[in-house]
Length: 308
Image (cartoon, rainbow, N blue to C red; front, side, top):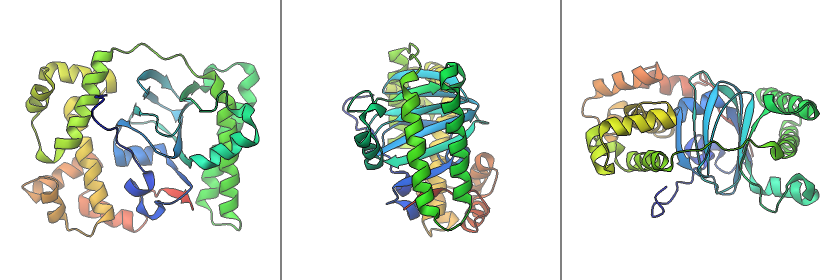
């Protein structure tokens, strides 16, 4: 990361579903979040929140504070508050994403300091299939707890909120118990990482201007071929796709959280032709923008869930 550039802080409730901006716990399926944010999640942080990605299937490339991991499910990576991280998931990856306010986790560690090896919980990446037999029961328990959490969220039974709170606490205890088995980070070419992170920073500031890739590459001081090579090596995605995914993320946000018309959103995003914008959205969302908004509003597409 460029030390002069602040790392974006993402509040899941505010960015992904504003109904749950003040929730203590937020849960959703990995595929739903990937469908909104895209496969590539550039470097960011979550102030005051722990976040865990439990990947059941598919491969994921993870960068935890510039430590690189490449692993397939079943696995999880745990990101403490403020730790910069980035990741790229395969198109068919599935699993669970749990975002928990730090106070809840601190209460658990305060009640039993042996849950954390140090006052500050480190970021970890754990491959469950590689754990020794002494951890088999805990790994199985973790999987069952996520299934129970998903089922409880899908229902509306009495005591739902305290049940979700209790399941979240049990999940965090299990995750902390397994965190001592973090994988050893893979070596990463720092120059490639710097180019990749700078490219994502530039996308964030310029994507509404629809810069051609040649201008991105020139601003970064590299050739288009070099930029594309870095993106494929780091994210397994072409550089142009990273720009398009950021446009898609903002398109979905405006469709879901504003009352702007499709034409107004088109022009806000820097498109000059509403018909072209509709074709662009259809290509990557597999639904025209109006139908996406309608189905999401009607609850026909999967919804995120949070615990107040």
